[in-house]
Amino acid sequence: MFTRETKEKLGSRETPFYYYDLEMLKETLSVASGEAANRGYNVHYAVKANFNPVIMRIIAGYGLGADCVSCNEVEHAIACGFPPHETVFAGVGKSDREIETALKIGIKCFNVESAEELEVIDSIAGRMGKKASVALRINPNVEAHTIRHITTGTDENKFGIRITELDAVLELMKEMENVHYRGIHFHIGSQITDLHVFRNLCTRINELWQWLTDRGFEPEDINVGGGLGVNYDDPDQFPPFADYFDIFKNHLDSNIHSTISFELGRSLTANCGSLITKVLYVKPGASETFVILDAGMTELMRPALYHAYHRIENLTSEGPEKKYTVVGPICESTDTFGKFIALPETRRGDLIAIRSAGAYGEVMASRYNMRSLPESLFSEE
Ligand code: LLP
Image (cartoon, rainbow, N blue to C red; front, side, top):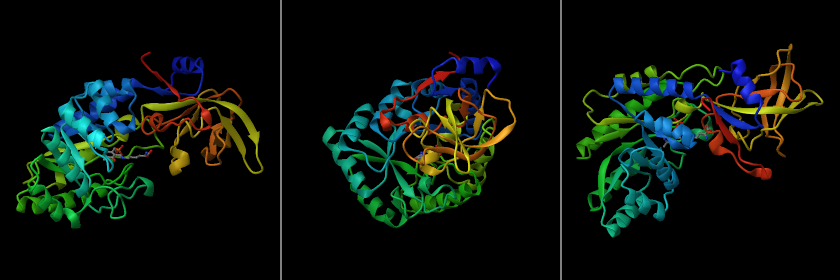
C-alpha cells in the first residue's frame, strides 16, 4: 500500500491526517457490488462508517443505495449522489423534524424501531398529506459473537421491535392510513467474522417471513443489515464478500421472492483508510517503552472505546524490532493504540500508519482537549 513515493508524499504533510487509498476502495466496491449483483442482491452503504464526501461520491458511483441514521446523513447522502428512492432512514430515535424532512425529500423508507415511532410517523405523514413507506426493524434475538458494545440484535439491546411485540404492531399498522408497509429490516451487529452467525439470521428470517406471510404481511423487501467483519490483522485482505452473500443465497428459503438488501459499512471502507501520524517522543516507562504519537483517541477512538486492535506500521524505520506501547497525547490512560507492539526501532519523527481506519475512524473523531479535527488526503491527489 505504501510505496516509497507514497511515503514521501505522506511524510511531507503536517500530521495527523487520514489517508485514503482510492484504488483499494474502488477494488473493494467493485468486488462487493459485483458479487451482490451476481446473486440479485441490493447493497446500501451504511453512511455512518465514513461520510467523507470524496469517499461517498465514489461509493454512489457504484450504484449503491444509502443507509442513514440521521436526517443530516440523508441530506448528505443525496448531495453526494445517492438517489433518494434508494435511501433508507433507520435509528431508534428519529426526531419529529427529521421525520418531516425525510418525508419531504421522499426517501425509500423508514426502518421503524418501535410501535410509538410508527404512530408518530403515521401522524406526521397524515398532517403532511403524505404516505410514509416503512419497514419494521425486527430484533431477531440472534447472537452476533462480536464485541459486546457493537452487538445489536439480542433481547438486551435497545434496537428493533421484539418478536413478542410484532403481532401488536401489525394490528396497529392495519389501522393506519398514512403508512405503506414495505417489508422488514434486521441488523444484528458489526465486525462479525464468524459467518455462521448469518446462517442463524437466515433461519430466523425464514420463520418470520412465513409468520408474516400467513398474516397477510408478506414483505416486498427484506433488508438483512450489515455487519460483515474485516481482517484487522491483515489490512490488505479483502473481506469475504462471495462467501458472505452465498450464506444468504443458500440459507434463505427459495420460496421467498422479496428483494434482498444489505447495509454494508465497515467491509467497504475500513481497509482503504489509514491514520497517518508522527512519533513525538519515545519515553521509557517502568516496564515498557512508550511511543507517543501526535494522534490519539481524538482522531481514532476505537481502541479507547472498544479495545479495538488496529495494525500499526512504522513507515520510516527499518531497524531491529523492539516492543513498544503506542499511545496518543490525550489526557486519558485509555488513549492507547496498542501495548507491547513489535515495531522496527522507533524514533522521534518517524512516520506511523494505523491501518484499517477507513471505517468508524474519521467519523468518530472528536475535539476533546480542544484538538483540531483531522484532515484527509487521497491517493489520487
Ligand atoms: N445497518 C445498521 C442498522 C447499523 O446499525 C450498522 C452499524 C450498519 C448497518 C453497518 O454495519 P457494518 O457493515 O459497518 O458492520 N462504531 C463501531 C461500529 C458501530 C456499528 C453501528 N451500526 C466500531 O467502531 O466498531
